[in-house]
Amino acid sequence: MHVDHAAFTVPDLDEAVDFFVEVLGAEELYRSRRGPDASAMPVNFEVPMDAALELSMLRLPPNLNIELFQWRTSDQRTEHPRHSDRGGHHLCFAVEDVDEAIAHLSRVPGVRILGERKEVGRDSPTVAGNRWTYFVTPWGLLMELVDRSRVQNPPNFVGPADWRRSADRSSTQP
Image (cartoon, rainbow, N blue to C red; front, side, top):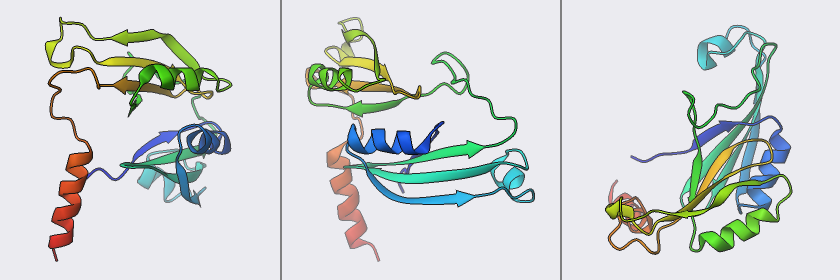
């Protein structure tokens, strides 16, 4: 049907929720706790028997839910995968003006902008004009900003027209 949410593990749930709410405009929907439960946690989450978690589900209008986890376990690894490591990841936000978004984020304590704003050249004609940059949250989550307003004929990315079509289909189905 559709993607429901993306999830990320964070070292401090309150800090991450505050960042998503205050800086990115998310709404916290609920919080929940699980574990420790030696019979359920290894089977259902593939984590150690002593693992426990607290989670927060956030809504980022208009189209994304984010689930943030804070885990506690005796053998937790604390290093983030690099972009080039297996399991490396990032979350990308489409923005109307990438320069304005960079200026806003550069005023947020702990945020690191990686390099200068970049623009895709004619060597990638399908997305030439695409303007972007990566940034890192105060706790180390890699994120990207992308501004496709200068791309002449962008690929058919999922976007607002798709959400309207999906909503129209849903309203006509029993």
